[in-house]
Image (cartoon, rainbow, N blue to C red; front, side, top):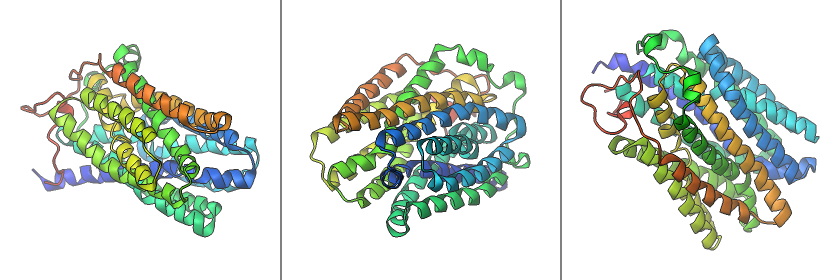
Length: 418
């Protein structure tokens, strides 16, 4: 295999992974700011939770728009504008003192973050530029980027909050977003190494995909994922504090989730190669239900909390590659950015409920038990939602002849530089 041919492919995947690391790492660290933000502003947990929930919701609403903008104006322009705007808005957050200001800033963060490095844009562009033989590895690299972002930024952000204050830590995240802007250069048109099929063979129209019950089964399942992970991102530091554990555990909790997420993503990739994306998702959601149940039953020591982080980390973003893979496989690559944007919108609807209801539950009852019960129930619902899905090749499946398995579009995962 020609090394020079596939080096640009690897660069595109690595650039997307880095952008995913910046955006997802920063979003995963927001829960660390909730308590100091509440102490500084006195707005209350419900108000801050609602503002954060609205951020998650608008991030989902912005994703289809970001996908359409990328298709019309080019991925490079959208990412550059998104990174610069994200940096500017992040730097404004320490100056928000009223509920209105907080809601406005977090809403702008959602829109700019979606443009800077949303799942729909990055995974779609990588899928379009990477041949089917190496697409699975490339998607795995991008997913791992989000995990590494959590692994690195979680403890660093907590350390900066403890050392220099939460405002300084927020300014540091703003600088990081600005430094990520040059990564958009990897997506310039000249770097593509895979010739795109003609428009007539690149998948069904958006309206036809949106009319498919299978599409909405996939989207609703991913909505459950949004409820789970966004509740954990925003409220797990509060859960840890309620357990009487030191604040440093929160930073390490995020780091352990990120580390184990890499392992989980690789395991999900192995399941995809040997079985199906549908089966992988069923197993992942079942594991989430079991993990939450065990966490509720066990004493809340540091080791139990970190063990729970490891368990949830195995499933955290591991749902993303098979979900994106199903969308691309069943509905084609031509409008994948837009379709993944719609799936992410449903994901963020679940995220809105998870973040907001988490704040409501602890304020009304003094604990998070009812949200944990909802986590278990919704995980089981997600398992049921994926049972009727049947995988079939999309019109633009370019899998090499001889590939086997129920997910040939993600088959033959091996280093792209070989």
